[in-house]
Image (cartoon, rainbow, N blue to C red; front, side, top):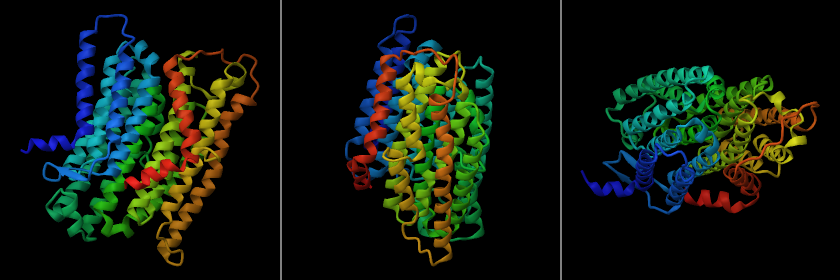
Length: 479
């Protein structure tokens, strides 16, 4: 073994170091009541990891090509690390109340480590190990409130679904191995042929990862898991986990199955159209805010994967990474506010609880409105620009005079119509806060400094990431 290969895994090595530091700090101070320094320590360490991911590094591989990294992968790692930093920042009050603060931080960092390994995989075996490294601690995090009925139910559904999807995915990978006798992405790509065995392997592999991204029809676990999991974990699950899985799926489709693009394009178009449409229709009917955000995240997953319909890797990965960045700040703003309200409202998260919310909490109402506008794609907020870029990536290279190109334009038209539908249900929250009458609205809340800082970061991103063209240009130049 060449031990110098470990120096090519700096982002992962820094996460391992963070885990060790947090474990030692938690072990030493376990019996101390006052640990106000613990959350700042975890946040600073995660911020350092984000900066490390931003340091430019050449494309390289390690361990015989099992680990592969590039500037595009490093950019996505930095985006997910930033999102994890926001999660840790806004979770301080809840984590302290849970009396398992150290365990929570270590579970989150462990999950991020698995996602990093998954995104840097150059081999199906390494990919699957990274996926499971992310899924197992995430399942533990979903079950964090183990004495709550809904949390236990959410964890059970998440674990069963994750196990089933992993089995389906392994079944597909075994077909691909049977066809080509190798797990390495580069070797498979050079030998790839559209044989029945390979097509079946592609379908099963796509189905397994579709569960992780919550694409229709693999989405049935999402609403119950989002509702039952602690709100902080729900926010992490909706943005960080989804972003890593979407990036990995896009990378494997382009780098391994590029020779079968006409096959997975058809599969992707069907799934995207179903995900966006069905999720929007079900979101309209929701009265519980976390279930509402679950169907919103299914719809957003469909929009994210629009980038895969194009035939240009650099454009597709740039638009997908940019969309995930905007989605991180907008969705985490929403879940941070939901968490604050839940902690001060007896754990209730019904949409009706927000009736007249602006009368007692005008600032939180305003920030929630901005986040909803961004998720809906209303200009001039960043969400509008992110949707524009994935739409442009989707039609890149598509010729409307051909059957394939006409179908791609048709899917984009369906997505555009659904954007209008999504405005209706996102504005339901705004209507509840500003228009719906309530004789006894929620009392005025005072957020802690961590929550205020997290909301300030998210709001800054929502407002500036769209109008500052440098952000997208930086992501595109890194590909």
